[in-house]
Length: 296
Image (cartoon, rainbow, N blue to C red):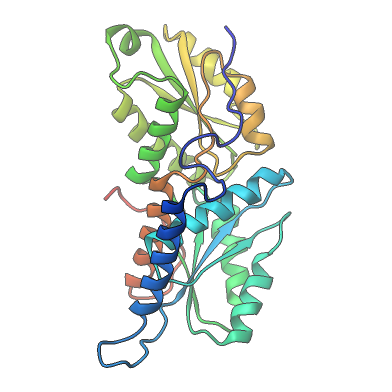
C-alpha cells in the first residue's frame, strides 16, 4: 500500500501569518491582558513570574524552527504575562547557554526549563541539567512531555487528521494497529516512557500500538509494522511522536504502509502540556532530576 505523507503543518493550528482582523485583535488583547496582569489593583507592579524556557533539540530542517516558534506563540497566548523563551540543545540558534546568559544579564529572577522532548533520555537527564547548573539565574528543570494524557490527546488528534477513523469499527479493532515513531534512545528510562505513551494511546484507540525508533538501534518502523502483521494487524498507521518536521519524521512517514500523522507541531494540547510541566516544576518542593509522572 502507499503511505500518506504529511506535507508539513497544514492544519488550522499550524504556524502561519495572522490572516484576519480577529486574529490581530486577539493577539493585541492577550498582550494587553498580560501587561495588565502584572499590575495590582492599587497600581503596584507585581513581580514577573519565573521565565519559561522551552528547550528544543534543534534541527537542520528550517521548518522545525518555524514550528517551534509558532508553538511558543501559542503558549504565550494561553498564559499572557508569562515570559517565554526558546533554547536549543544543538543545531539551531538560540542555543540554550545563550538563552540562559541573556536571562542572567537581565537579572530577571528564576527560570523553569521545560524540555520539548518526550522521555527521560540523555538530553533530559544529563545535558539540560548540566547547562542549567552553569547559569547564574536560579533554574529548575521540568519533566519531559511524556508520558501524559495531553500528549496522547495530540497524538490521537494528528492521527485523526491523517485519516484514522473517529470511531473505530469492528474491522479496525480486529485488523488495525499503530506504530508510535519517535527519535529513539538507548536509555532504558526513555524507552520505558515511550512504551507507556504507547500503552496510553492503545487504550485510547482500542488497537495495539508498538513503539519504533528512528535511530539508536531500533526496532525501526518497518520492524514494528512486521511485528503487527504477524499478529494479524495489516491496517497500520504511523503516529509521529515528533515536535516538528525534520529528517526523522519524514523518513518514518515514508515507511508507513497506510497513513502517517503529521508531527505534533503547534497542537493546542502540546502548548497546554508545556505549561503543565512548568507549573509542576514550580510546585515541586525542591530542584530534582526530572521524572516521568503518572497521568493526571
